[in-house]
Image (cartoon, helix red, strand yellow):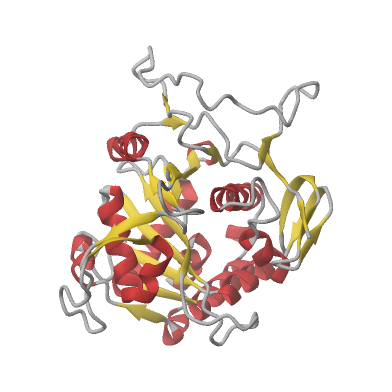
Length: 375
């Protein structure tokens, strides 16, 4: 996103091929950022959806339809000092509100008491995903974007790959992924398959896949922050071109002013103030293999985000190992999920410690995926 934002505002020609969509009522929340605005005042919230549609994509394994298999909620605090990416499980069973129609008709699609989150894209398109996630999280979401399989492949190519650590090999025939233990440079189709695998990490479930994705995303952020990628006009233009060709943006994002403002915000956030967290969930009581929201823990998470307070994530996700600062420490040590969490720091200026039910990691903390072999 920052790559697109940094370059696209200065190269108007890229906008000729940009695909946009109107979010309906949600877009009205973005009045503070009009066409040509060069500043974003207050918090910024953007939903990024990864679509699994094979239509027009280089990956075509015979699957049909279109699901929102990846749902990332980016929130930047009102003071622009902190950024949090919340991953919402695709297997989460949630209420779906009435959604606007193809031409913005209000309440065109009827509300449903419970559906799998990843079905909302096929129910009512990107506006329906936005409405559902907004209702679930209690967050206003004025902006949204959607990226394709080819977009992920081509962006990893433009970056020259992302270095990811594995404590054990990943062998997953479902995604045709075979990676050795150690550091792997993931580029092209291999990067996409790493992000898609769930059988090859942790317990093989959706939450393990998200934890694996967070290992990749945090490594990506460290790579961008430690290199000259975002100051290299050729690389940045390449990222922007790939983004424009493979992403759909809400219409209120597709202005030079907005892109410039986002670029300025994202570029200046310190890496130790960027967090990846997973929306907390439990096993669904009657739908095997599905998840139900942990509403109490989720309320804690979004209260902290809305407050703008700094926070620390106290537990990594399933299938993730922290790389210890002490070489003698056990990198595979598992934290006790029932350990008490410090929710009220003694120092009022100290970061809030999130309960262990909310897993994730800070971008500057190096982690490794604990792969496994599935044949």
